[in-house]
Image 1 (spheres, rainbow, N blue to C red):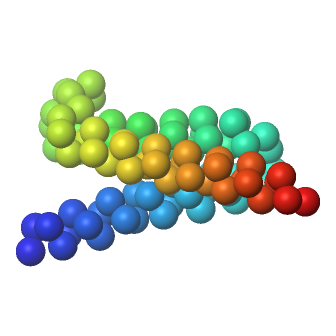
Image 2: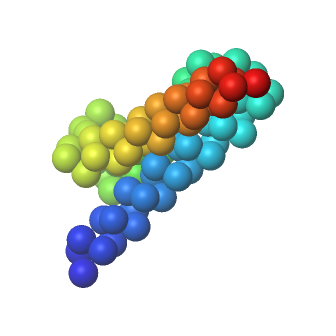
Length: 88
């Protein structure tokens, strides 16, 4: 059951990173969009640490995994934007 929860969680991180980067990139440069989305992801992880009364800088295995999937989503959106721009 834990694996199913983890798969849903990481899929959500990837999807939100991808969609948020693509949507924000409509209005600003794609790199600015990526920075904004990743800043949100890091601040969200810091908030989760603080809500559990952990140190804000203590990013364990789960935190790193979450940030990795955020980064995969953001990177995939950047790649998709550049691929589609090259065709038009």
